[in-house]
Each structure stands twice: as structure tokens, then as C-alpha cells.
Image (tube, rainbow, N blue to C red; front, side, top):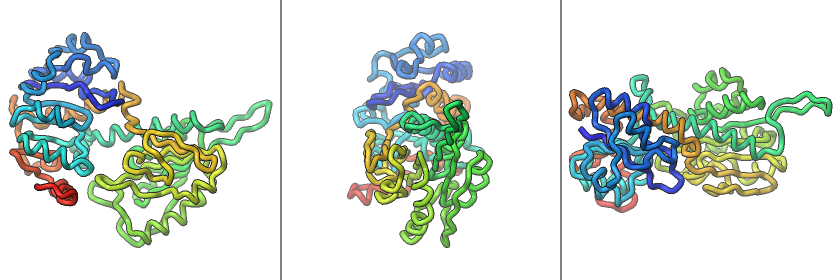
Length: 381
């Protein structure tokens, strides 16, 4: 079985699907690993390092895509890449199936068995495969560093001969993996941290990291399948905004992390809230690519509104490619080994991990939510 690692073609994508350490482990297990030439260059993994790990470097892109049994990627495959894959081959990658269902339709049309890394269920069995969480942790960490660099103040309290400097106040909105990592990082830098989430169950996790939990009591279920926050009613959104407004106003830094797969990100910070913040304050919006949690966010740009800097970073995990790739490599290789038994791909759709993650197989789209998304855009399923 030939396992191929593709070089990422998306502008700004610096991660790679497998690093040399993981490649060496897979080779020892008897798998043949192909690596597209310079696939790891942007992640600081050389061709020589892959060869030393036992991989074969492939300079012919068409050969790599057309002859591989299993293709491993980070970013969503482009149409021209999908067209090079042979019928019946397997793809493991982020697919963003709800936001880009046309890509899934293309994969099904080519009769490719595609696994979406963001569809790994949040269960203890699948924890080591959870790429969405591993990459979100990278984003949460880097968001705080970006905020600290942009804030015209110190993060920690300092006692100096020139007087005492008060610590920065950081407010994290959303206590998922990215939010919790942001809380932990801000605390390490010495900030006073508050955090908000519509899910009451995360209160203990927030407090265990040394942050104050801002609680909003809502008369509706706020937890979706897998423990994710679910979309709430307009009345609940209004109640939430009323509670968090004062906390946003009094913060030096606000970090927003709320995203809903396949939908526009919920608006958490309104124009009025931004206007009430002190000049020089900073907002880092991790939902920028989904429209943003903050009014005024522009994806990939830093904008200043009412004296407040609003930062809308794109693909933050890619800005830390060494460790982001290392973590992703562990996730994707664990799934790969879970799928392969005795040198053959075994697809047991009664297994919750395989059933949830496999988006296309045998020329069909298996995921009903993706089918619904295609119907909404007028495509034929």
C-alpha cells in the first residue's frame, strides 16, 4: 500500500501532513511512504530528513496523486488535485464539508473514499485523532501572542522603581479548545483573565486554569452533539450580549473563538461594544474566516475602529508549522493505522469513528448534513 504525502498548494499553508518522525514509525510497520518533493520545506522538514526516515521522494506530482493508494493532506484539496486521483483511492484531509460541499461532490464523482479530519467524533477513543482540537489549541496559543504584541501595555503586573504596573485584563469568549489554550497562555503571561461560554459545563475547566467564569443563565439547551456549543435563539443571543457587554468594555484584550461548522460565525461583539472599549485595546477574532465574532472584523487584516485594533487572523496553526505539523501528523497517522488492518483498508461503517469521518465512498456522499448543504446551494446530490 502506497501512502503519499502531498505538498500543500494553498497560499500561506506551511504545514505538512506527516513529519519525518511519524514517517519512520509507519515505515517500520511495513508501509510504503511517498513524499512529494519539498512537501515539508515550509515546515522546516527537509527531503533528506524524509529519506533518512525511509520515505521515497517523488518529484512527479501526477505520479504521486495518480498512483498512491492513500493520499494525506492538510488543506482542502483543489479541483485539479482531485482530478489527478485515481478511482477508488483514499484521501485523508481537512475537507470543510459543510462550508465547501461542492468539493465533497467532486470527490464523490471521482469515486474517492474521503475522510474529513474535522469530522472525528469527540470521544475518548478518538481523542488521539482529533485534529480539529489539536490545531485549535495552536490557534488559541498564537492568538494571545498576537494580542500581547499589539497591545500597547504589559500583560503581567510589574513592580518597578517607576511605580506599579497593573496587569492587563483579558476576556476570552468561547471556552472550547482554542479558548482554553488562550486562557492558559494569557495567564502564563501574567494577565487577569475572564472567560465566557454558553455551556455551563465548562465552568470548572475555566476556573482550573485560573480564570474567572462569566456565567449567563439561559433557558435552553446550549450543547450540541460531541460537546460543541450549539446555535442558540435570538432571545438567548440578546441576553448573552447584555451580560458580556460590561466585560468587553472593561477588557484590554478580547479574544473570540465561537464558530459553527458550515454557518456564519455568531456575532458576539457589536459595534457598540467596540466603541465602549478604551483606545488602544485589542480584539483578536479567531472566527474571522467565518465572518467574524466581532463587528468590523476583516479576514486577514488588522483594522482600527473607535481606537480599538481588531485583528482577523487566517489559518493561525500554519504560522507555527513545526509543532502544528507534528500534532497533525500524530492525529492523521493514528486514524490511518486505525483504518489499515493487515495491509488492507478496512471500512467498518458500524464503527462510530469511521462512520462519522468518512464523507464519500463508492461514488456517494455518506453524510446527510453535507447532502443538505448541497441542496441549499442548488446542487444535485
